[in-house]
Image 1 (cartoon, rainbow, N blue to C red):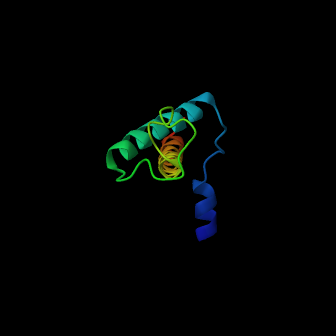
Image 2 (spheres, rainbow, N blue to C red):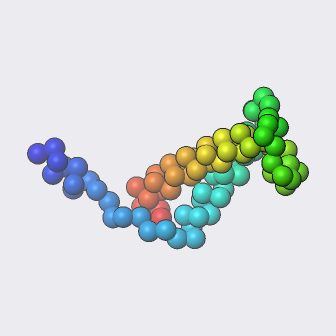
Length: 86
């Protein structure tokens, strides 16, 4: 009974599109801006080759903010897909 309810609620698979990519990029920009203002030591070692290109972030801060951005982006994409917007 419960399985049939879950199968009935399943949506169509989400196909990648430029809209999905744009949402992920915007989410990463938001996450980097959030990280820039909240990370206590953004330039922790190991340093990146051109820190000015990466906003003065070290490798740990860059990985943390982009991982957070992808989590935000995937949540936004799945939420919008569930609402039928994309």
